[in-house]
Length: 105
Image 1 (tube, one colour):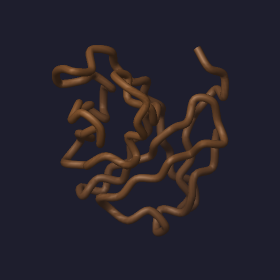
Image 2 (cartoon, rainbow, N blue to C red):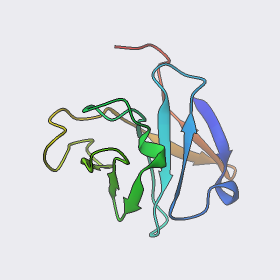
Image 3 (tube, rainbow, N blue to C red):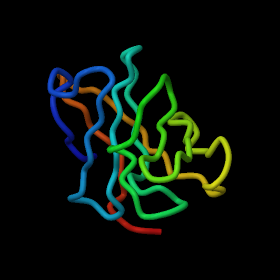
Image 4 (cartoon, one colour):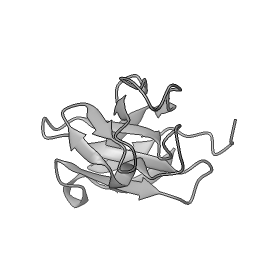
């Protein structure tokens, strides 16, 4: 498990990039209070999804507007055609943790 930050340190509607693992992971806190973690790099082109726009359970890549469902990792349409990997997120004692193998596939 990778420690991300305290729940209070990641406001709803925001994301954080964890680049101490390979591949980097983006953790999102939706306006509904849900937490999701996905590979941070868009599968279409090298862009950080943590820098994208979060709406509901969807993040839009900041480069070419590919949108990914944070629950499944699937893109909603072109230009991305490949899913991003998703990771389980848990909150323990007010701290966000992500299950990540730290091994690139």
